[in-house]
Image 1 (cartoon, one colour):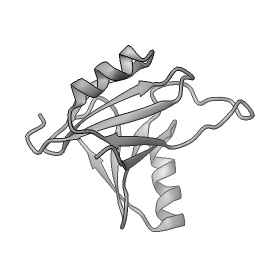
Image 2 (cartoon, one colour):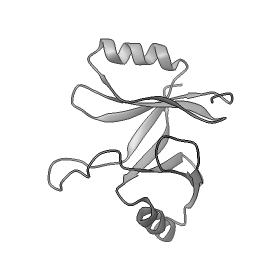
Image 3 (cartoon, one colour):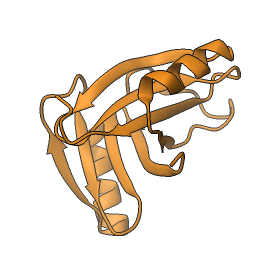
Image 4 (spheres, rainbow, N blue to C red):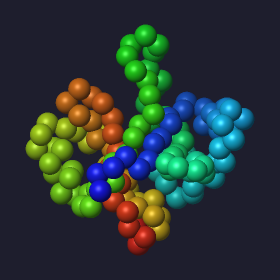
Length: 125
């Protein structure tokens, strides 16, 4: 556990990035319905990934890293979230279900770096 199992690419224009990454790397994108954001699962060998509608304005260039977000698999989402908050972290996006796959949520560390938590649960709704 506590391995990086998932990465996400944020985009202000998801269809543009789907085309870009499909053509560059041959990745396949499958739109996921029923989530609070526009979301595409990335099909490839190796690590799992996703592409989503950026939930905030695109950061300007030359202001630090604008990168993919990694998600860490945990045994217990709530217990890990409590530790994050106790150590000065913040919730970036509340926990939500990716139906029949897992629970997902996002946090900020004390330097405002975004990372995700994943608790695998085939019964997530």
